[in-house]
Amino acid sequence: MAENLFVPNTLDRKKIYDEIAPQIAALVAGETDLTANLANVTAALKEAFGFFWVGFYVVKENQLVLNAFQGTIACTRIDFDKGVCGHCYTTEKIVIVPDVEAFPGHIVCSSASKSEIVLPVFDKNGAIAMVLDVDSDCSDDFSETDAKGLRKVVEIIERLI
Ligand code: SME
Image 1 (cartoon, rainbow, N blue to C red):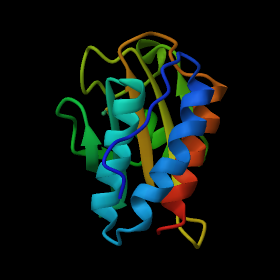
Image 2: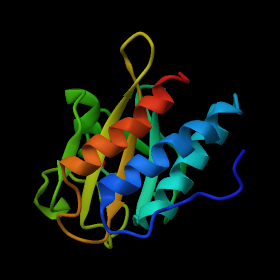
Image 3: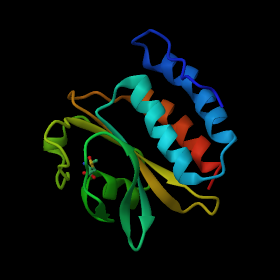
Image 4: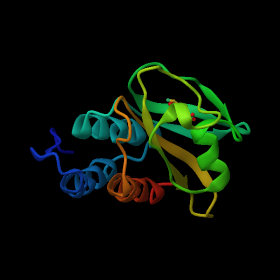
């Protein structure tokens, strides 16, 4: 596996997603352990963009349970109908929240988190197996560019589950 992640020196997030997606695909290709791969995916996203928090909540025991992540400590279990992550789970859609304080039911893991994007990750049967949650300490930090770029990363994970 590659020793280093190459991140282009630009603020153009699309360019960064385009550059890191194949590297992430290569990174997970040689490893069969899912947790190891999820951990490296969160590390790659954190390193490439400097996001405040990046992590997975997996569907387990009728809840979303904290799994691999990079960032500050976080709540470990989220009910399916709670928070932004739960909203993503129940709607099965990508959720972008420009201002977390304006989102009813948002679960505060850190007061530093100001905006958030959550993507569903589907298994081969089309059921949600986990969600990818990315938090920023800047308001309104996520756009369609992030939705598309992170979706590409999620597709790499979906091929593993
Ligand atoms: N804010 C999320 C909870 C997870 S943390 O942000 C890491 C939510 O409302 O679902």
